[in-house]
Length: 212
Image 1 (cartoon, rainbow, N blue to C red):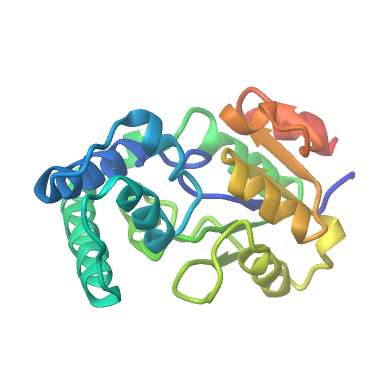
Image 2 (image 1 turned 60 degrees about the vertical axis):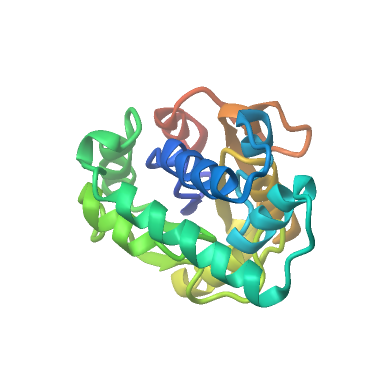
């Protein structure tokens, strides 16, 4: 078998909550009178909450103090948490459940490596909280992607060397994090176009072909 360990990003790879992020940031931008659109929102994918806020505030007409920024970020998360209440198992992306089961049957160790501090809530709401051997998320790290910290932590929890772990990512920041961790990367969605990936996949079930 080519890879015995696979580390999945969460949002955009296993589950789709992108629209909820967009709606929450849009509400913040509207309240603050800051221009925001989907093109700007695309720059936020795979980036931490505070770094996302900094990108949005590039178009602000005033300077925000650190305390004001933290309050905005918390407000955004409150809106996002409210929207997450709508999340169900139907929001799991195509082929995810079947592929995770197939990987388990093939004795592949699987983990989540996500910068999101809402990782456990999201997994619980879609019924995947017990599907993984390890979970590393934003509550345990000090540096967000493209820093490799979350993927290195996931590998550590799996008891695996970085080079034996295949990362699955949909965002440029995540691809760079995987590469910075010394791990091969399978890119899906927008990340499939990245020059840094090892494999391009159209859907999650393509992983079964890669590990064969």
